[in-house]
Image (cartoon, rainbow, N blue to C red):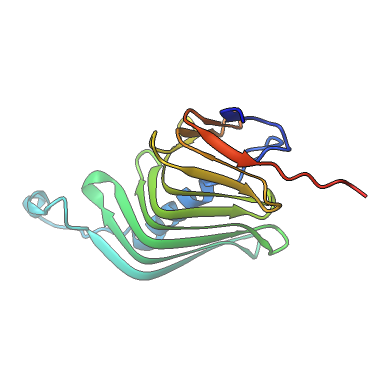
Length: 204
């Protein structure tokens, strides 16, 4: 099995010019900023300077955030806990789960992770802890223990020794280490060893 998967629609992963997106997970993290983005306004700058960087400015529990577009629910995000750190432009979500809906109200993308660290200044994110995203339109999912998203270059990647699994609903899958998903080129590559299975069903 080759160490890369490109636009071939018969391969799992980013195919046919589309992708099993993790982008909404980042959008979900950004959505929390709308919920708990209010910061404590200190009248004295000294108080702000004395605040430890390890202490969040805002904490919210059992967060539920819904985004409506054109009179319909387009996304819902839930998190057991959300912490914002103004000094580092960071929001940390714990036990995050999101669902993105299509224009017919059906689930388009669903994902979850134990921890999401979102950087509001760059819109980059580190996602970790049983990360899984399923795309109904792509009929596939991505699963990993941790992933990093860089918005400027639209790249999703894992640590060199991190195992990442891309699986289609029909049972086709590819897994390996050294994962990089280039959302600009719409291409997935694995620099380390890979293994997989291709399921082909004969058309009647």
